Image 1: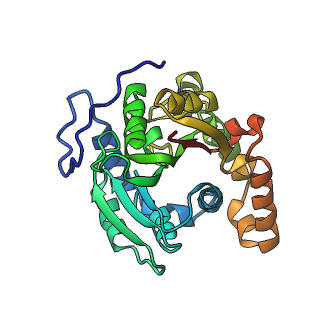
Image 2: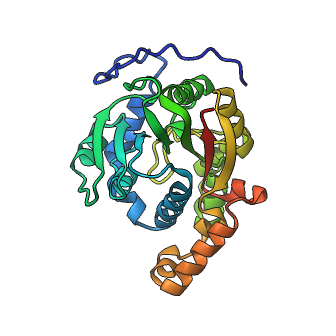
Image 3: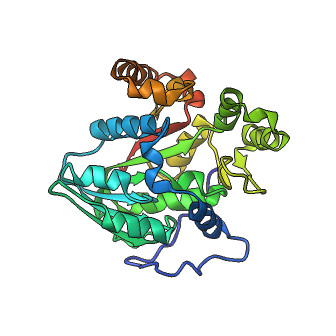
Length: 294
């Protein structure tokens, strides 16, 4: 599982053409095709994804160094977290493999004193100098990289660009999320979904070969222990693992509950209470590893 060679990445390499992929490396194409059909820019403002955003921001608030620190948002999508950080005074460089995401992030309004710069790139070969940031967010790439060696390369790139004492905030999707959502949302009635969920539980390899809407795209879903092992294998000091949504993300009729201020407060209280509970990590849609470059 561990012991792979470190990436030999060139410094200051700007990736504007992702033709670096081999015939067997179609990750970027798969991601682009999926997000070409899916509006990622509005995702975090709808449904239970609002809990994901609120809880991730809460974790970032207590784990990031104070502003105005320099943050790399790797796989930062259309810039929801980058804009949130910039509004709080952070200096943010966003990198994403999807051109439409970069265009959206470049145009996102920032009301604070911080700044957002966005560019196309690949988390496995970061176009940034060694030891150039106080913090790195890796809130998407780990569940889009299906091969462990690619995930370790990406993590080692994050280690390279972090200054000593810098923080990595790395997110993963639970390998049980499909099973749980299937039970609560009724998609388990579909035999194709049953096969997808079974594959997730067995290996973490998520495959939606028929590209059925709502069943996500090709990816890798972690067991909590796997995420800790990978960040440690990449050379980080592992600090803690946090459940993001916890069981609250599975709440039926989430929208109605969230719109009620009293119920929303209770949802956030429950999610926060389960944050560090090891037994709740696997039932959270996402969990986050907080790590330090020593």
